[in-house]
Length: 240
Length: 374
Image (cartoon, rainbow over all chains, first blue to last red; front, side):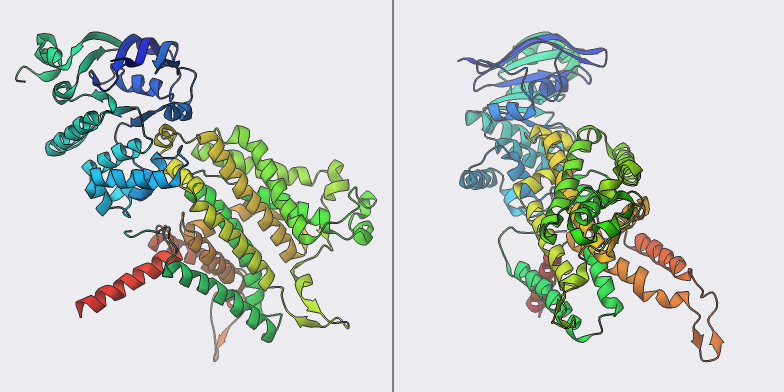
């Protein structure tokens, strides 16, 4: 197993405030890696830095042996990193199908894009039913499916998900996490960011705890799930 | 809102095409048999011009989410470019009387001049787009409005007189009336002065519609809905916005050239902010994000302001009773009230974000449902 993504000593500043104070972590090929942490810990900033949406202050981000720090968002997508943004952020006034097509924006092969859309429909039959509906009229869970499908249309090697369970009903959250496991079994590497630490740790191979811009703990998902400090801080004492 | 546009050519698209052709044919036939002085033709010519500019503004405001108010400035650039390159050389001494005939001493055919009008406007859009497009919403609107005002002042500057004729008007260039085919004695045999502007607008709007439904257009709509998500999908925000700005300005420039042809004269003073607001009003009334709406409301707007409400400006007698309030200028009062009522009751404009094919599809679906329930 090789490390697909290596982040080393990454620092990001937001107008004088250090959002990331030098974090390092690795994402191994074929695994689910999760970053957990409270609000403002710097989880989303980490993803944005990797996808080229914010400028980094210092540090290195290495993806499949290439330094992607100087890349802009477009080049990062072209390298094979796709993102499911926080709060889904589907294009409300575009149809489901148009949303999927936008996901494949950097691909030129028309027939393969059509085939890719069919694949997404097979995975999420409910999107097929709503093919011509505006994305803004979908339910929260359907929008999350669409956001995942849209990211998959870029044919990513690494899929980054920012709080996919945010604002969804418990049953739907379960569904989303089973989708994440399915994606992993198909060989897609996933970097998952979650506040729902319980669910995230349960499906993660490797996990990191982020606190105010620093990584304070790391280990396998199961190990962190059993760790007393993690249980106290993120899972609540009643967590089993 | 369900059942939106499918890409394949379906019957609704064909019916839409047929309606457009029918309108063109009807105006051509009407032109031949009705008196040329009828207000209908004046309104059709002006609304063809305004429809094109409104659609070009809609491309920015409705489909890309860029709120720009520079339309009058780009129309001015287009109108002047057209005028400068089409005034017959023999007439230049008369037109540029204070500037010794002006600098430009050649002419190009009207369609080349029209293309140039678009290109010049697009070029200026590219230049001012570099700084202005970094701004967002209101700030962008103010900056583009400022640009239009500066252009208007610049074109009246005495030092540019040999090209722009200073604050004097450009005239004697080919206008819509020159499209009429005349016989040897100068009588009009075939009237084309309404059909040609309608054709130009149809062609340009057709190009814009194709653009909106292309991959590029889809990316613009994605930017409108969510810039950050669009960027995360790999869409380059800056270059897409700039291209949309240039394309919109290109067609505003062509629209400006059409306005020059409609008026038969061009003067920088006429391209005021009020003109931009009129266009904006047309876009809002038609529906932000609907090309059909822009075209429809351009016609209604021009017809109502120039034609249908004219009677309000004169004394009217009902039998022996003189209708009160009617006097010069009362038309504008009524017009303003109508606009307020429309905006109040059609919050999203006449068409919302729907297009003509959507309406036809909706009508068909309703009929199918009725047939099924019987």
